[in-house]
Length: 204
Image (tube, rainbow, N blue to C red; front, top):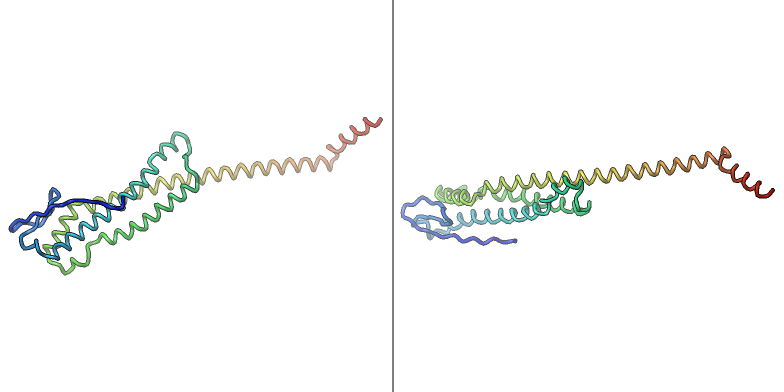
């Protein structure tokens, strides 16, 4: 899906350390009405949601190729045309390009450069609770595995194509060889002589 829905609760505590636990964002009394606090929270939640979008997309592509290595190992081929594999490689490449833009978007926003330390701590706490860094590493690993799988499939398809071309060349060489033998036989009289002798015997 192209959207994610999560529900989080807010809890106010006097002199509490800003944090997030059990899907609850804990804030101090002075933070509850601050628009900057809401913005800091929104940055963390928005980055997590954007990351989820790419996680879902790469999961779908992974499911498309999940059975291919086993299929290639068992049957020596995959039930997928060169065009389909090329299209899948293209889609994954586009996702990787978009993900590269995502990595820069997941950096600490410029807003926190001049923000109080309490807001930075709140942002970091929410990102840590949502495991943004860990999920980003997992996303990178899945991209690498998927890319390796597609590289193997592409090399396999290229090898099959090269093998077919080699057989076509062999057949063409054989045909040319046969034609050459026939032409040499005609020049030497091996083929035409039999025809002449056969025709002369019938006339007598």
